Image (cartoon, rainbow, N blue to C red; front, side):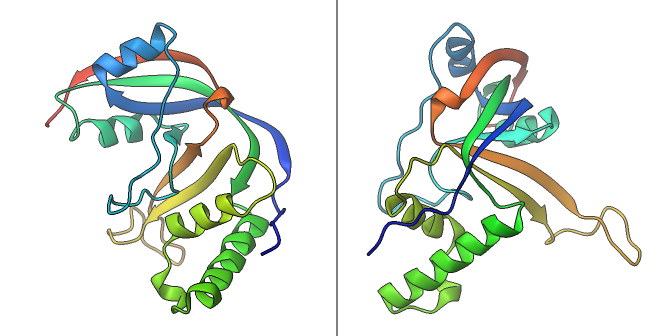
Length: 183
């Protein structure tokens, strides 16, 4: 199969990116240890945007809500993320890319499109792209909940998420909150 080349580099920088993690890890990162992530092993649950280090764009509260139930003691890190080569699913072009990839996977694997989840499509794209992918950006809309505003145009809870695959795109990590979790 020919390699895909659909993502263009961006100079966009997200200065308010928040990451929730175990407090011990957060302290190590603040002292200079790099962020790390391990590719998922077969059988492990998929993440929303595939493998990487996840940040909530512009919302410390979402990072806290994610970390609190997972750790006994958690830390929230604030960092700057330079998007670089970004698959931005908040754009029409980004959505067209994952739609095309889903179609290619459906044909190649002889399975219905609806059985292919977003994380699998992104992993397939990364494996068949002719350039490194630094970040993936998306909005996670929680439509399974009641709208926070009802009317002609209801508003739902949304999380702006950045999945960082190239950890060199993360700079200036600072531990901004420590707390007791529910784990």
